[in-house]
Length: 195
DNA sequence: GGACGTTTCTATG
DNA sequence: CATAGAAACGTCC
Image (tube, rainbow, N blue to C red):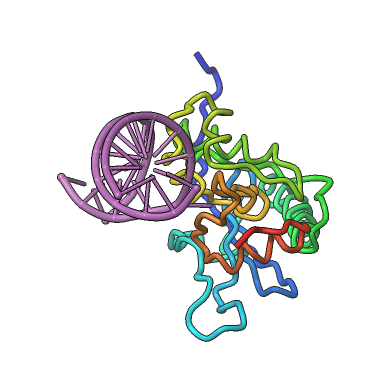
């Protein structure tokens, strides 16, 4: 059907974003921002481990920008995307609403996961939803637990606000990167979470 | 099969 | 009311 042969672009580029809360790592594919990792340093004030790094990146992704791109167009897009990502992340960490998000590459997810992630994007800053509400929103009212799984698999936390999903009683629920982060992000948005 | 970032529904005191 | 199973869902190990 396509006359143009689409050359697969497995290229991934990782770029860092320094913030007051640590260094985040953004990974871009040819389609846009593909993942955002929390700082690997421990966060929090209490002893013990709190907050761990996100899923490890593919080896190819760790080479960084210099190893890339033979593709100039990609390189140009990258600068723009990364500027937008940086701004959006910093806004989010400050509890403000990001005016603009970079293009998001959610293609790594299954149908259900992508549905969940898109639903998450519609939750405004300072608002929350329950796992069951999300389940209803994607048309799978009974797949509540699967929604929890999809939230946990969210490759772009903070910008895709999985932290705004709480249990139906207002409890925190879980957070892959550590509940400390979830609490922090919610607090920055002015959300009081019941104990 | 088992374990999850849950929720509801059905018993029981 | 409080508490205790159990079932439902999708994905990963």
